[in-house]
Amino acid sequence: MSQRFLGKHVVVTGAGRGLGFETARHFLREGANVHLLELEESLLQAAVKQLHDAFPNARVGGTQLNVADKAAVVAAIAKVDAQQAVDVLINNAGIAAETPFLEIAETEWRSIIDVNLTGLFFVAQAVCTHMASRKRGVVVNMASKNGLAGEVGYAHYNSSKAGVIMLTKTMALELAPLGIRVNAVCPGYIQTPMSEAIDSPEFVRDFVDRYIPLGRPGRVEDVSGLFLFLASDDSRFMTGECLLADGGQLAGQKPAAALADRMVASSR
Image (cartoon, rainbow, N blue to C red; front, side, top):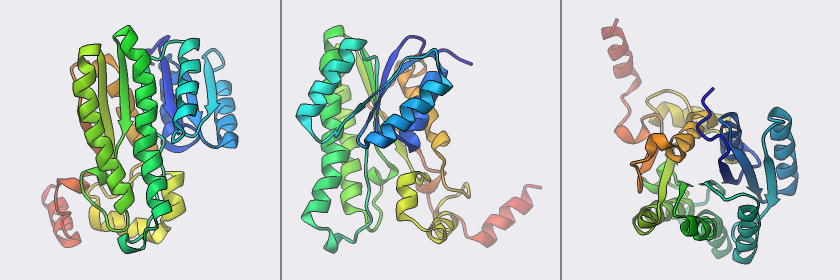
């Protein structure tokens, strides 16, 4: 097993479950010390215990945090950075809801933007303030395929993720002279606890059949490796980039079933 992050201090937001938890686990496997930031206390405690049990020789910490609360973010990051200088930020926390554009209430709009974009900004700014003093650091933001191409029913979510992409590029430009690299990951349809709370199994089957050339929804392990790649020296000449992992969805129109069968037959 590679030890690319031996002794490095990695902070992961939204780390109580799903992609955040899986990414934290992969960093621990590669030698990192990891601090989890999570809104739900019960998820946080369960995640910290599970990771500590799996990696008893690693340093695993956790802090309950609402990323949309700027004062709480600044205080929490200062405390975490004082324990060990933060080398990598995985800015993953996010929420979603499916609501037609004309039916989105102001409260729902604000909650999505406050967490996915403003909260991500608060955490990034707090962490990068400390990184700047050391002239080194890596930030990987959670964007989305929905920040590159719209999807019906997700105007607020799409807008928040498009904002993350442009924030990532602007951060990369401004922070490069300070030795900080900033990139983003843009997952397509990934099955997570958040997606499962929104989408029925029937919806998932129909979505895959219509849109995903690789023929299945994504899994968290399909994406977590991208965060490690962008955080590592393997991507040391990359900044301001947004890596898409969507099973081919945005490559173009998925071929009809009959055409797909013909292509498979001709390849034999």
